Image (cartoon, rainbow, N blue to C red; front, side, top):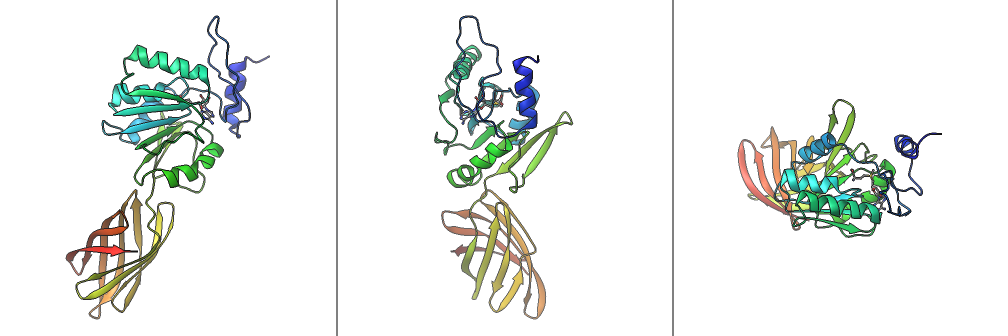
Length: 281
Ligand SMILES: C[S@@+](CC[C@H](N)C(=O)[O-])C[C@H]1O[C@@H](n2cnc3c(N)ncnc32)[C@H](O)[C@@H]1O
């Protein structure tokens, strides 16, 4: 008969969506383990993986970090102790893990910046996050995806230990110790649509389509139309290239800008000359 912890780890390796599970952490003498229905059992992230997760997201003093399903609180605690975040919050369903996390935060001396919320990651508001960390299942990530894409600010960094997001490709991926994948995404701004403005006396319009951070489309400058050849959207920062026929010659066009409120503002370089432009949807 295999010990319970090994059975839970085997279940985790298979990585199907969890149904009902409980903590794999040892129960202390006199403590009653809380049996709560969770989407993923407790399996702690090893310290080198936490370090890699926080490094790939370039976590620092300006950040508000949420760990979704925070277990014993190790990720928020390391984010505060070693990366100096402004605020780190763990959201966890299991009250025993919340208890462990609060004790660990106290022992580490980070209670001024680290808090734990006993609640469900599908219900608790985490929209003030600048960084979100997760060690869940890919199916759980998929269920969280609409909240991540629609409730978080463009530019919020998301890091997942081991599990991906299906057809939302990562912006970066690192392999820890050559074997453990850590995936990194930046929440993309919503740039799809038709944008209009002027460059000097000529009208400029952009028709953009978007799937996550992948952007394609066409640019129209006066009577000229060109397909965007390469585009890159990172949070609210958009760059793209196209080639337009301008005064009878092929001219490379490059845009480097930002989505702010509902305007796309940036530098348009055409024929070697840069102009600041503002486009409206
Ligand atoms: C694999 S552990 C990861 C723990 C910690 N984030 C780490 O990396 O060490 C997943 C945690 O998510 C918690 N959890 C699962 N479903 C949850 C839910 N719907 N809401 C909040 N916490 C949940 C579990 O109790 C467990 O502690």
